[in-house]
Image 1 (cartoon, rainbow, N blue to C red):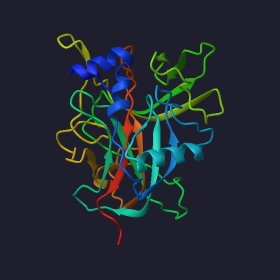
Image 2: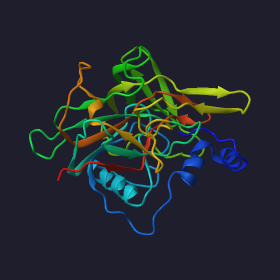
Image 3: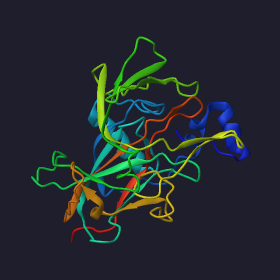
Length: 295
């Protein structure tokens, strides 16, 4: 979750309940009236994490999607949990490729020293059925072609007999756990996943965390550009939306693919970073906005 903050107020919150307390207090204000959304949530499946199942009771994917939409309507956020957790939205009006400019934005809750980057994927409803079953294209960012980034990375999360942690193992031979913390004691395994384990696959970005001995806190560095919930000096707009171009879409082979428009956007938590103090690093999303609608 979000990095500890150096101001005295947040330091106090950290003593009470860790970094999670900061996000609960400052994760996003609420408008006096719910917003009208220009999109609908069609899938919401977080990886295990300290905000999963907290403050809501969803036992089906449909109920989870309703919860996510209500959060967005109220200018609040949803957490994607650890690596691989994702949300998929369908825009009611397709977003047109401007062929150079920014085409859409994604709101998060990053700030200086606290970036929890999510990889963004897009798809066009080629078969016209309104379902996100077409080919997904990854929007490349600053880290996409570096050796430290792993494409086709998979991680499997499993329930354990020990109720204080969730076990994970990946397709690289590594394993570990996501432990519950004192501030969030609910089950971290999504309640709408019936099986005792599930696997998520996506692009793994390098560890962006660094311990600051001087300030005695974890710093979550921003990547240069191209990710959600990322405090970028390039694509972060004044309204706190990270902005994206359809022109950056690449297929599974890494080839650029020029889509004339898109209907679906997926954001996926893209780091596998877990620290005792801050818990899992997880992408947060508080909304989407189209800059180029089909007329």
